[in-house]
Every structure is written in C-alpha cells, then in structure tokens.
Length: 110
Image 1 (cartoon, helix red, strand yellow):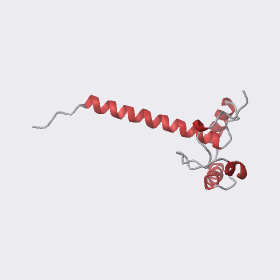
Image 2: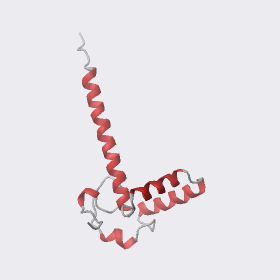
Image 3: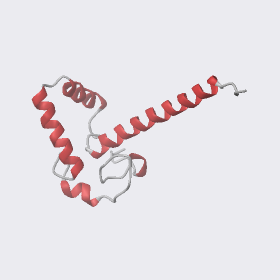
Image 4: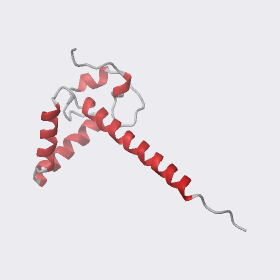
C-alpha cells in the first residue's frame, strides 16, 4: 500500500523555496543598483526613474536595453570602464565584475 502524502509538509517546503527566491531577487536588484552606481540616488529619485522607464516608448526601451547589454559585456554601458575594472572580481549572482553589496562597506558618507 502507498504511503499517504504529507501535503502540509510539501507546501511548507514550497513556501520556503518561494521566500528564498524572492529574497535572492531582491538582493540581485540591490546589487544591480549598486553596480550601476545608482545607489547615490535617493529612493524617490530612483523610484521616479523606474516609473518613467516603465512608461517609456519602445525606442527608448530598446536603446536602454542595448546600453544595459553593453554594460554587462564590459563596454561603456553607463559606469566608467576603469571604475568597474579596478574592483576585485567575484563570482556573484549577477554578470558584472563588481563585488556583491554584502561584500563591501556602504560607499555613501555617513
């Protein structure tokens, strides 16, 4: 005879995995903001820029996509080339050369 499935335990495992994935996504977005040197913007400015990007036309979005692709390839996508190359390499979760946010001190003055 088959052993009955413990649906509650399976749901707990799936819930834990979903929370882990959400936390990983949030961490990656934070790392991306830091890598693009946008961490100097205030929260209101950053939110406004993201809202404007969401509502932008297709041509602007394509230009931004190309610039972002160049950034991840190591081209001049936004940050200074020598700034990104001077930082130590790390195998992080994002395909950029900079250290993860948790691996360096807060660059903003106190």
